[in-house]
Amino acid sequence: LLGKVLLDKFRDGMQTIETKFVQGFINLMDGERDPQNLMIAFELHAMIMAQLDQTNLGYYHAEMFDVVSCYFPITFTPVMNDPNAVTPEGLKAALTKCMEFPEFAAHCVPFLMDKLSSPIITTKSDTLAVLVRCVKRYE
Image 1 (cartoon, helix red, strand yellow):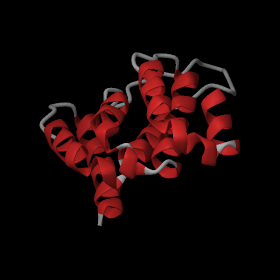
Image 2 (cartoon, helix red, strand yellow):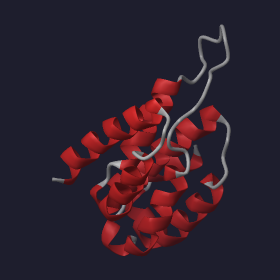
Image 3 (cartoon, one colour):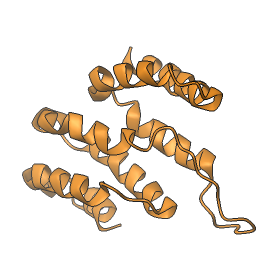
Image 4 (cartoon, one colour):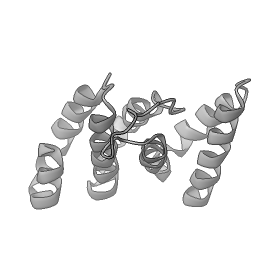
């Protein structure tokens, strides 16, 4: 949540510490398991990629891709009867948004092509859906 506030309110100031911020974000997100925290982390990841100057962050693109791609495909069963529960669809949409940045094309396309060899039909279907979105965005 603090990261979102920093990017929202102090974007210009963040440019001077962006590499340290991205390093901290990667370390913080690595291994996160809580669905609600993942939704926040995915949103912050997308904000970092969209709002910070990527010419200074190219060194971190592989790590930024790896820190989100490890959650693909989403296999999550929400808590029953919880109206505020995170949904698998919400997680999938947030994760896809993170993966479709053009800076990740060199990492994402081979990753998704590998996932297509899965014997699990839902994995193939999810992979194709993400691949289509990514290709449209990478054009």
